[in-house]
Image (tube, rainbow, N blue to C red; front, side, top):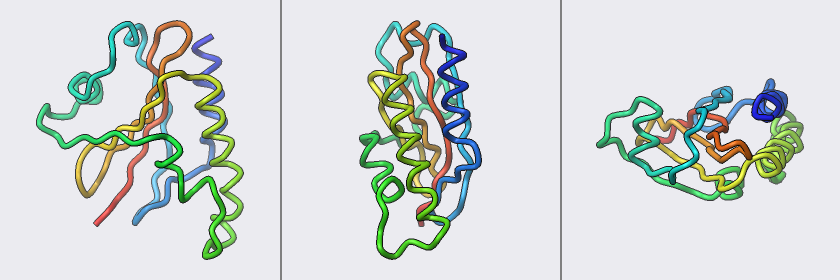
Length: 133
């Protein structure tokens, strides 16, 4: 079941780039048997190999993708073509994971982890980077 979820996430992120001041691909991750306890900021920093004092903030999934999953009038062709892909990605996440949270780790070069729980008690999701100066 969990392999099926990671496969769906791989398909949904295939060829898609997270646009900020730079462009980064998405990576799918899975942490087996990690969803029994609540995911704290400290636990996420530990799971992702960040120092415990690293800045971390959480945002809602829809808020995080607000400029990607809805077409804006100033979009170029590539951005317009990506809107349905981002909508599909959000839908895939919501259909396959529960308790989804978006974690932004760091300040300028921000590691982003979109994490949820699988029905089998694993943590799964996607990660990417955004650059904000």
